[in-house]
Image (cartoon, rainbow, N blue to C red; front, side):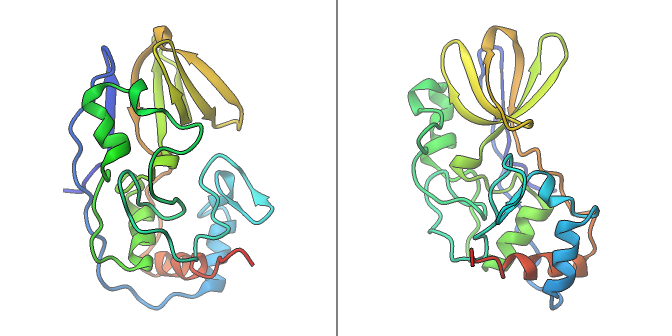
Length: 214
């Protein structure tokens, strides 16, 4: 069964248990960066509708401009390519604003462990299971409003009265908790497990590994 790193906050925003991530396959065919670039920039990958590379793309998802550089060691709440480790970043939800039973999962502990994985394997994992490892600064929430509306956004802050997010239209929004029926912490990124072949995944990873901010 594929592991899911997801927390559901409802009826007082209690946090549900978290499953560990599934380790991606150890082997993959050689990738081609040119083909991978075409997938990332084209309609099949559609990556730039959320992510940014250089001066191209959107700001909603993690910036991929330097995704190919060595990433910081995975520590509490860290992991996930494209994000550093450590404590909650400036603008992130402070631990005291969260339910006590959820603080360790959100800030003090890894959402999922990825021992002995190469950078390429971590990228494959991010593509096929976006919820497997979530960096603290890349926590996204799906808000189910009491009127049935669904709102997605990057979690910036959470206090007694409001959920502050950077929404999918790239705007800051303060959502009243009184209007929220359920808040699920999960990535809005779709899984490419069934959208890309093993070869296409290898091509995308090969291209992403070339992105070093130059």
